[in-house]
Length: 140
Image 1: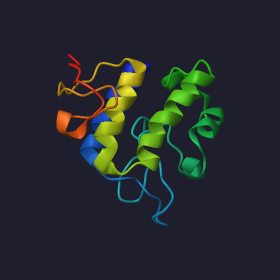
Image 2: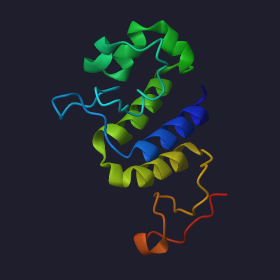
Image 3: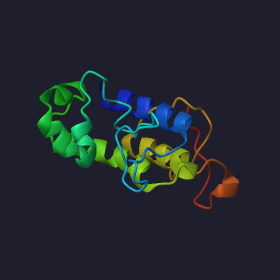
């Protein structure tokens, strides 16, 4: 999967799920949880490659423990790991209420195409009412 494909899949997953995936403790984010929810990276991991033992690991540790995931995510350098960690942080550190905003800003930073054609500014704001940072850019 290239970066654009990864972004598209995570965006669709998170904006559809609209709920964080937590471990049973309700505080620790989970790649996959007992309710069937998945985090940003959990949504990308094929069932045949997933291991419950990863639930206590960061994505860098997971990639080291399973070389097949390195190939799956097309990881070639530290910048690729940083990309995955940054995308993971949208799920782990932000409320689902702001995921769309955060994902729009993420797409802008990486120069990605966004499947949702709604206009947004360079900071991920959806409308001029939400934004005082300048005119809304057409992302088409």
